[in-house]
Structure formats: structure tokens, C-alpha cells
Image 1 (cartoon, rainbow, N blue to C red):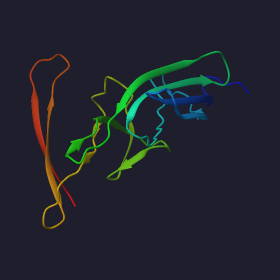
Image 2: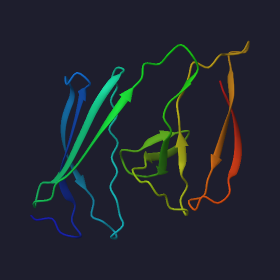
Image 3: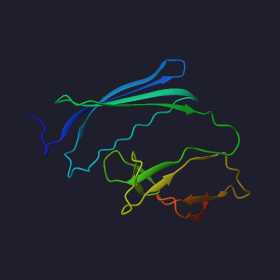
Image 4: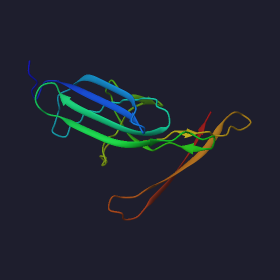
Amino acid sequence: GSSGPDKPIPTEIGIAIRSGGGQPTLAKLDTVTIPPARNERDTYTNLYRYLIPADKYSIAMHVRPLEGNSFGNWKTEKLIRKPTGDFSVSDLQFLLPSSIKTTLEIDGVKVVPSPFSAYPNNRPLYAYIHIYNLVKDAEGKTSYSVRYFLTPAAGEGISESTLSVEIS
């Protein structure tokens, strides 16, 4: 059967990761079934997670529906730093709420990484970071404050908020 506007689309997704020295670190080929779009702005998001040692990497990905002649690809360079023994923070990642099967659950909220550079203002947007090497107090707890600034797209004015979190 052929895929149409109201049918799922069997799709090949390939990912390749090479270290800075050109050595293959990972090569994976998946076939996924993408649900039919509900409207012209609908998207499909999937999550791939890999643990890789600190190094500079070339990461490439391709997407190809199994029926038809479409093909899309993406490539980037990424430096993965080795964590030090000092306090450090990971890259900031934006997440959107989701109910799809491959979602990540954080504190009871199901989310997926957002691949977009613009975000709808009618849906929650979550910011996710890892904080490393926190120092515990006498009760075995750690605490820290996160301070963030929000700047409107037009560049006019700045809003400031502070969030305090305690982790046990």
C-alpha cells in the first residue's frame, strides 16, 4: 500500500557519529512509522540518546521516507567536554510537553526536546539543565538558585525571574 495524506509514513532515519580523529563512534539505521499529519504545521519528534566520551564529534543524520524520492539530512560539530571536579552546568535544552510513546518523563511531566528556534506562546516550554558536583550540607542535601533572564524577540525590555530549588 502506498502512503497518502491520511496514512502513516514508513521512514528510514540514520545517524552517524564520528570522533574528532575520524573514528566511527556510532552508526545506526532505524525504520519508524510517522503518523499522518493533522495539519500543515504538524511535526514529528523522536529522541535518540547516546553516552559518548569527551571528544569533538561530527554528528550526521538523514531522514528518507521508504516510498517516494524525498531525502533530508543534517550535520553538526559538537564538543563534548570532560566534566571537571568543579561545579559545572550542562547545555540548556528546551523541552515541549508531549504524549508520544518516546517521551522523556521529568518530575511527572512527559516532554520531548524541541527542535525549533521559535516556540508557540500558547504551550508550556520547559528549560532543562544538568548541574554537576553540588556540595552536600550536613543533612546530605544540596541547594542552589537559578537566575534567568527573558528577553522579548523585539529586544525591548528584559524580564528577570529567580527560581530556588532544593535537591535531596
